[in-house]
Length: 377
Ligand code: GDP
Image (cartoon, rainbow, N blue to C red; front, side, top):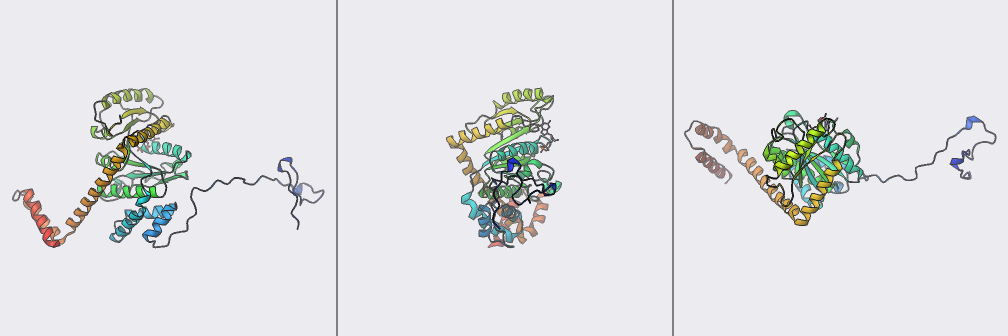
C-alpha cells in the first residue's frame, strides 16, 4: 500500500485512510509524536554475571551502571574474608577514576532536619545537572536498624530524581569499620560519575570526627533553641565545622534563628578555624521551605574555590589518604592480634591480674604482645 499523504494535525484533518463520507465512528484524535526524547541518564549497561570479577565490576561501574554500583557497595560492606580481597582489588582498579566529587559532611542531632536539608539540596543540585550520592556514617545503626537513611519514607523526592543515589549506612561493627565502608562506597560513587557526595552522620561526637576525616566541607546543622545557644552541642563539633546552618528559620522561629546566628558568629570568632584560611560562619534558612539553600551551596562552592586556590583542599585530601592508611593498619593489627588463639587464651587471665591489681597494665600489654609475637613466628 502506498503511504498516505501526511496531514496537518493542527487543522483537525482526518487521516487519509478514513473512508469518504465516514461519520463519527471514524473519529480520531491525532497528536504529534515525541520529537525530542531526552537522553537517559542511565546508559544501558549489560547485566553483571552472577559472580563478577573485580574487573567486570569496575567496567560496569565506570560505565555508570547503578545495579553494579549497588552490588559493589554490598561487596565492600561484606565482612566475609573472601569478599575482602575482591573488594580491595576492585577499589585498586577504580581508584584512578576517583576524587572528582565535592564531598560534604552533614551532622546535627536527630530532628535537626538533616534528611530534609539533604533532600532539598539534593533535588536542587540534581535539577542543575549534578549527580548526587547520599551516604551515611551511623555506628548506631546496627542497634536501631539503620536510623539514618534507612527509612524508605525519608527523602522521597530525592529518591525519584534520576541523578540521585541514596545508600543507607553500613550496619554493624565498630565506628572505624563503618567509616571505612562509607569511604570506600564514596570512592565507588565517584568512579560511577557522581560529582557531589553528601555524607550524613549522627551527633555522637566520634562519628563526626570520622565523617570529617573523609569530606572536604563539614556542615553543622542546628535548630534555634531557647536560652544559651551554645548549650547542648559539643564545642568540639563546632570546631570541626566549615559552616553552621541554623535550620527551621521559618514562621515564628525566624527571629530566634537570627538571634542564634548573631550569637554563633560572635562565638566563632574565638575558635580556631576548622580549615586554614577559611572563616566558619553561621547562616540561617529553612530546609522545609527551601530558604537559604542556594546561598548555602554558594558558600560551599566558594569554599572549594578558595581552598583549591590556596592548596588547602589538596593538602587535606592528601592528609586524609594518609590517615586512612593508618586507620586501616590499626584495624588490621587489631584483627590480627585479637584473632590469635594464643592471645585469646591468655587474655582473660592476664586481664584478671590487672583488675585485681597483681599486674600493672603496661606490663600486661607487653606480655600479651610477646605472646602474639611468639605465636606468629
Ligand atoms: P533529621 O533527624 O536531622 O534527619 O531531621 P528530619 O529531616 O527528619 O526532620 C525532623 C523534623 O523536622 C521533620 O518533621 C521535618 O519536617 C522538620 N523540619 C526539617 N527541616 C525543617 C525546617 O526547615 N522547618 C521546619 N519548620 N521544620 C523542619
